[in-house]
Image (cartoon, rainbow, N blue to C red; front, top):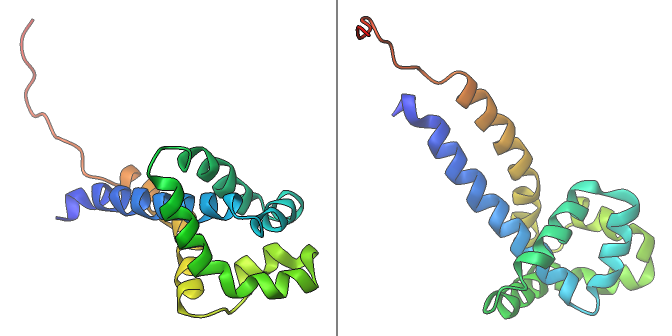
Length: 137
């Protein structure tokens, strides 16, 4: 198990990244989401990467509706606050408190880069095969 921790971390990284791309890609498709995209271009490179790659991901048939519903569930309560101060939309994604779904999405927002660093460390420290003898040529 310990020798395969890098594989487990890689799988967790893929799941976390997929969920981030799905949520943020759905946010770009919503009419209210344009404010979040403009704010991410100015302030948040991580959110901009999620939104850019997520927009490409949700162009796959069948994912668009699911991603829009997921983004509405996560960021729906924040839409009223964004209308008051559109320049702080990125701060609301990263620091706001709009319920359990948003708290889970916020935790996952930071989990992807942390899982990437943990995977790099685990991959670098993984045990290698030891060959005590070599074949003759």
